[in-house]
Image 1 (tube, rainbow, N blue to C red):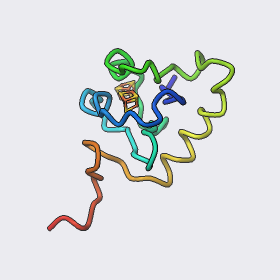
Image 2: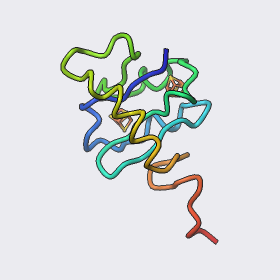
Image 3: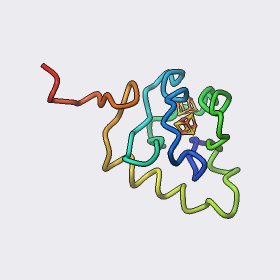
Image 4: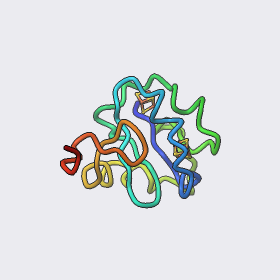
Amino acid sequence: MPRVVCEPCIGCKSGDCVSVCPVECFHETPEMLVIDPHACIDCGLCATVCPSRAIFSDEDVPERWQDYIEKNVDLARRWPNIREIGKPKTDRRAG
Ligand code: SF4
Ligand code: SF4
């Protein structure tokens, strides 16, 4: 079961979650981070360090944030995969 980033992430961008993820499955949108569910191995590390408690297993997402399951899928397709906040892995501006 992949993890899902929900509403409490909006505006955080601390990146604590990104730095502990062993498989680099976070993507950065202008307002929040999301997880690519196809890349997530469900290790749970990101959820333990998230200060906002924004990350849930997809089966435990609270009712009011159910739409974030699909949002993570959709936004991960459209926004860059990152290793650190503000540093897309495919950033062609570098170099
Ligand atoms: S630590 Fe939590 S709230 Fe902060 S960017 Fe990561 S998922 Fe979002
Ligand atoms: S559960 Fe593990 S693999 Fe999935 S996003 Fe969090 S740190 Fe990465």
